Amino acid sequence: MVDAALGLQKRNYDVEIFTSHHNPSHCFEETRDGTYICIHTSGPRLICCPLCCPGSLKVRHVRPPFFLPRSLFGLFHILFAHLRQLYLVLHLLFIARKCDIYIVDQLSTSIPFLRVFLGSRVIFYCHFPDKLLADGEYLDSDRRQELGFARRRGLLKRIYRFPMDYWEEVTTSQADLLLANSEFTAKVFLVHFPSIERKPRVVYPGINVERYKPQDMSADVADIVS
Image 1 (cartoon, rainbow, N blue to C red):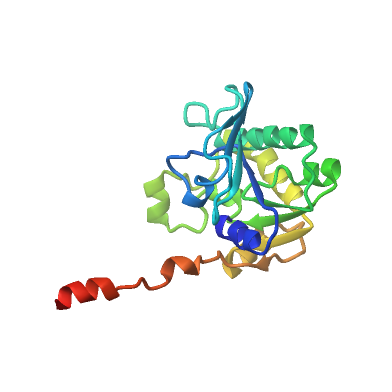
Image 2 (image 1 turned 60 degrees about the horizontal axis):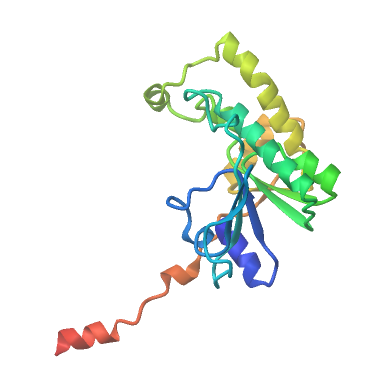
């Protein structure tokens, strides 16, 4: 998503990233060296220089309140992920941040709210469905055992996952355009989201070719020759 955002920015689109989690010490460089604003209950806090440097992105970190952690004693990750994204959407609604297009990544929770209340078109970039990740599907038996996945969901887990899996499918179907990161993901998507008849268009993760340009080695070669 970072490379896609940089590509759109180079084409003179105004790109802004909103996220509920951003760690400046462990993130993509392009999201750190431009305008990074942390927004929380005490107000916005400017982290980096206010001028967006070339090749960097504007990132707004909407920090959820303390009662919305990423997990509770290592449990309920997906539940809190949904709630944290809803908190982020509430922030967007509060500031009436309407954009021509929202590109939503990973979690689809926000899609209906962005479309209905902000009147924006939404593109959802599909990764592997969360309901399959939760059960370790498409892993061989040894790998499943290594990661601690049970062969079948227990009753409590089925009850816990049912609304999550249902909500994932319903909200995903409401996107204006569905994209997937591979043909394999698109096929898995169709099999496990049977109510969605549209096959996602495949857009492979971008590559920043600037990083792979050969460097000028003439000075080093001259030193060796001499």
